[in-house]
Image 1 (cartoon, one colour):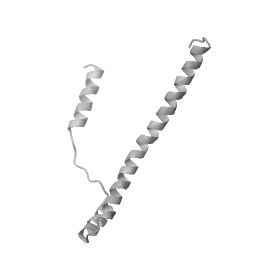
Image 2 (cartoon, one colour; image 1 turned 135 degrees about the vertical axis):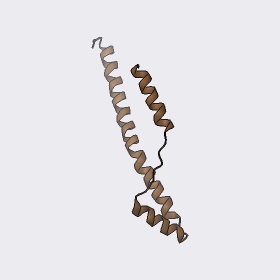
Image 3 (spheres, one colour; image 1 turned 45 degrees about the vertical axis):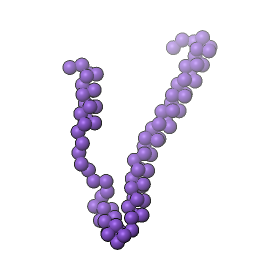
Image 4 (tube, one colour; image 1 turned 180 degrees about the vertical axis):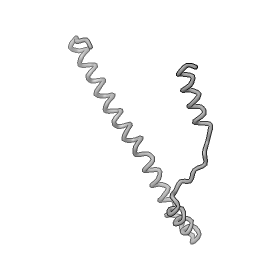
Length: 87
């Protein structure tokens, strides 16, 4: 089987198969359930926003590093072409 076909099959299976997971640890879940039963939902919303914040930070950092890497490589390539040098 070709590596490209294997990779495509893996990606499709990864996207199709879903496993149920819990978003919070046991203590956070108990705290939220206690607050919701008392009628206070703002703590749960704040915890969910914190989870989304922690989830997005690694991707944002990787995107920033990738942008600077791309820009640096593009400048370096333009410098070599401008001076007539070859790799």
